Amino acid sequence: MKTIVYTLELIAIFALSSVRGYGQCYPDRHSTTWFDGWISCDRSASPNSIRGESHWILYDFGAPHMLFNTHFWNLNDPAHLDWGLAEIAIDYSDTGAEWKTFGNTTLAKATGKSIYEGQAGPDLQGIVARYLLITVIANQGGSCAGFSEIRIEAEASASTSQLTTLANWNDPSSPLQAQVFPNPFTTASTLTIQSADDRPIHYQIVDVLGRAVDQGQLAGGAEQTVNLGGSNWKTGLYQILISQGDYRTRLPLLKIE
Image (cartoon, rainbow, N blue to C red; front, side):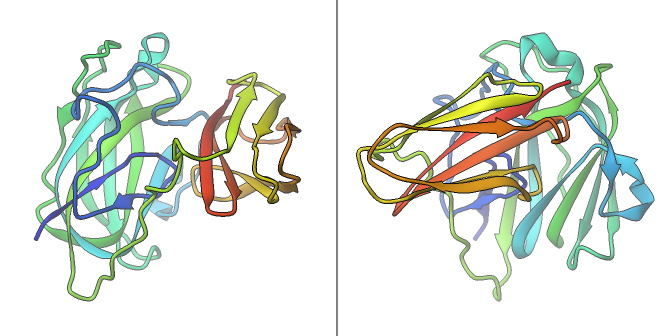
């Protein structure tokens, strides 16, 4: 049976489920905020050596899956439509070391409107892969590159176990309340966390590959602030992951030049 792989949150991890998840009230519409998406402002060495220094994002499905139809939403922030993608290359791998090229595809500029519904992407024709690599060949002319969201139809192989979903993140019943300001930031930002629960609070800031750039532990039961000194971080999108016992929450954080 086919399942829908839907990127509810873009941190280079897919939330896999046997039911369709939606990121907004209308499943094919997309918001116009910058943080609903993936953004890269610095080129870096690609996992696929033939791509060299580039803007790229790597998805790890946890196990091989058969991949089928795709749907893309380009970057839909009205102030940064030129950061959206114009052409991408799609590569795939079972191991993350040896890569096969599926091909290139072009994307139209987003409209910057809340009724934007993206566009159909290529049919991946049942290729079997654990890793999917998207590399930016050209953007819409801006200084950074990114897109809002991608949806992929996928079928797990018989040997693939059910992966843990991200459903417990941002639970509205959680006592955790957090905000970060300024956001976007250039050199530093401040994270503020409130919780009525007295258990310790753990936080971690990760880049788009899930690599931690900062982390720590705070006392619960009161308002806590953390000064985030990101002057040495690369420009781009980060996620602040906060946990307290069984509760989880996350915040996007964008560093700009």
